[in-house]
Length: 193
Image 1 (cartoon, helix red, strand yellow):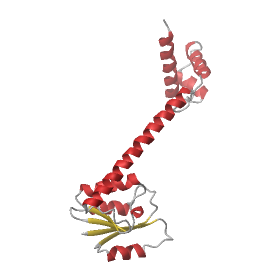
Image 2 (cartoon, rainbow, N blue to C red):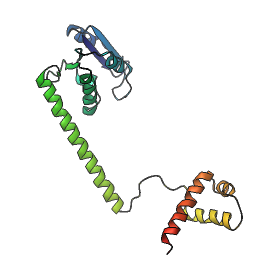
Image 3 (cartoon, rainbow, N blue to C red):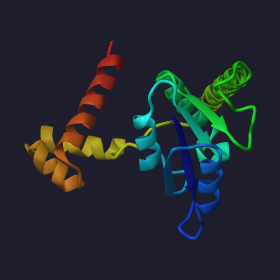
């Protein structure tokens, strides 16, 4: 069975041309939606992928109607291939997984996407290391300053206040104060001989 998938990005756009092209290509069932491709959850795409059976062929007018990025295209193509179905684009004849040449092209794309992903990871690691060497700290900023933690410790140890009272005075939840006190205690124990 040939299944067609059509998508336009806005309500102002029309699906008529895509539907006509897909019908002319022999699609017996059409799935279409008016939704930006940037949205990850596309209901009709999900329905079509769930509907697929071995031997079916998904046909799109252009690949950008199906996927948001190369990685997204490869993930969708892998899901289609996983059930034993094929993928064909009318505008890009090289994107036809029902032929050995089309499968080879998508395999090359998958390799390029994986290479690009590893380059991004390497650049990110290098950038983080360089930033850390410059003294940049990653993660959330501490809620309490060292002076506030010392003040809380004084309220608890010397003034006999409860952790709850000290936390209320500092405007934080008591669990936040407990964590801060535990961290400073651990740091003091590491420094002590």
